[in-house]
Image (tube, rainbow, N blue to C red):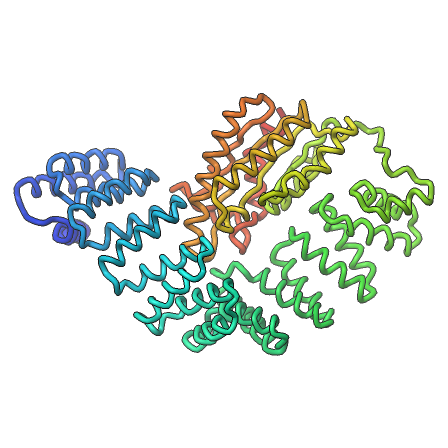
Length: 548
C-alpha cells in the first residue's frame, strides 16, 4: 500500500508540473501511465506501449511524454528519449526537469555542442541555476575552451561562493590556459573550504614544483596521498600520485624515496612497464644491479618492443657480471630495434645481429594496442601459442611511424610476418576530447597500412573497452564516445570488405546490464586497466579467434 501511494504521489506531482489543465483526456492518459508503471519491472516494452497509448490519448500530456522518455532512456534508446523530452518541454517550457534530462542524454551520446546548447536554454529559463553553469563549464573544459569554462565556473561561484568544486575546476581551467597565479588562488580556496579534496593538493603541488618551491610541492603531494588513501574506494589516482611524487623526489636526487614511491605504484598496478623502467634506472644509479636486472626483465616481459634502453641496460649488466651470452643476446635485440650503438658494437665484434633464427615465426600472434592490451600476460593466457605484444598509441599523425618497424620487419623477412594481429587501442585518445571522427580516421589509416603490407595476416579489430572514471561527467561522456567509436569501427570494417579484417565485439562482455559502464569486478583502481579477472574474461571472448 505504501508503494502504491508513493507512485501515485509521484504521478500527481509530475502531472502538476507537466500539464496545463485537467480534463477527461488527461485522466485517461494517467490511467495508461499507471498501467505502464505496473508493467515496468516485468516487461519494459509493454510499459512503453502503455505510455504510448497515453500520448495518443492526450497529445498535450507532458507527463506522458516525460514518463515514456525516462523509459526509453532506461533501455538505451537515447534518440527517442530526447525527442520525448523535447515534447515535454514544448508543452511546459518552464519546467527544468525535461531540460536537465535532455542535457544529460546529449552528454551520454558525446554530443557536447548540443549539450552546451541545452544548458544554455536551461540558463535562459533560470539564470541562477548553479549546477547548469557548472556542468556547461565542464563541457567547455573538455572541449578545451578554457576561457568559456572559467567564465561559467565564475558564475557558479558568484551564485554559490562556498562551492569548492567550482573553484577546483576553475583553477584547472586557469592552469590549462597558462594563468597560473589565478589557478593557485583557486586551489588555495578549495583547500580553505574543504581540506579533504585531494585533487586541489595535486594541482597546487604541480604549480609549486613549476615555481621551484619543492618543499611546498612535497607537502602537498603528501597531503594528497593521505586524502586519497582515506577515500580509497573512490580514489582512482593513487598510482599516479605515487608516481608524481616519486618523479619529484628523483628530480631532487632523493633516490631512495623515489624508489619507495615507484614501488608503491607498482604494488597497485603490477603491469605498469613505465614504473619498472623508472625504478630500474634508479637502481642502476644507486648500484643495485640485481634489482635493476629484475626490473628490466620485467619491463621486457610486459612490453618487448617498447623500451630499447631496457635491452642495452641488460646487455651492459650481463657483461658486467661476466655472462657474455646473455649480454650479446640483449645487444642483438637492441640492434634489431634500431639502436645504432648496439649495431656498431656487434658489427665491431663480428656478430650478425640482422639474421633471424631459423625457427619459423609464421605462427606468431601479435597483440597490438594500448597499455590495456599490453597489460595482459597473453603468453600465459595462451601458453600453446607464440604471442608477442606491440605498442600502439592512437594519436594524430603518428600511426605510420608506430607501425613502421612491424611492417618493415615483416616485408623484409617472411619469418617475421605474423599470422594474426589483435588490435585494441584508442581509450586514451577518446578521453582527451578528440572527436570520434578523428579517432576512426586514424584507425582506418592504421588498418590500411597493415592490410596493404601484410598480405595473408588475419587482423582482428577489437572494440574499445569501457572505463569507470572518477569524474561522473567525464565518465559519461567518454563511455558514450567509446560506444559511438565502436559502432563506427564495426561499420568501417564491414565497408573495407576485406576477408582478412574482422571486427570482434569484446565490449559487451565487460559492461553492466544497462550496457554502458565497465563492470567493477574486472578493473583496477584507476578505472581503466584490467585485473586478472578482466583478462581471463577477455581470453574467453577471443579464444575462438585465437585458435581457429
